[in-house]
Image 1 (cartoon, one colour):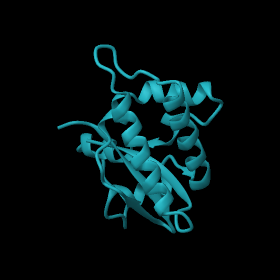
Image 2 (spheres, helix red, strand yellow; image 1 turned 135 degrees about the horizontal axis):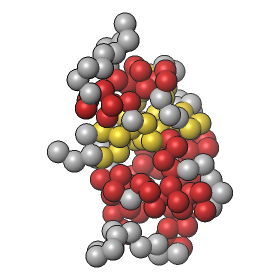
Image 3 (cartoon, helix red, strand yellow; image 1 turned 90 degrees about the horizontal axis):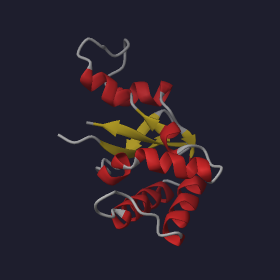
Length: 141
C-alpha cells in the first residue's frame, strides 16, 4: 500500500475530498515545500494534514466522542489554508515548475506527473470556488 496525498476542501464543517491518489506530489513533498518557500509562499507541507495517517497507523488512538471519521477531526483541528490563498499558492507553484522545467527525481524525471497532479488539484479546487472556505492535502495510506 502506498502513501499518497488527497486534495480536500472544507465546505461549512464538512470535508469534501476528490479521493484521487496523488503519489507524485507525496513523493516530492520535500521539494515542493522548498520551492514554495523559495517563492515566498506558505510552505506546501504546511497544509498537508496527517490526521488520517496518524489514526490509521496507531491502533491505540480513538476518535473523540461524537466523531465518526478522521474527516470530522481534520475539519475541526487539521492543517488548512484559506481556499483563495491555496489557489494562488498552487497556481504560482505550477507556473514556476512549468516555466523553469523543474526536474523531479534523480534517475527519472517525474516533471510531467507533478504538473499533471497539480493541474488536477487546481481543477478540483476551482470547481469548489464559492463553496469551499479552506483547502488541504491529507496524507493517506
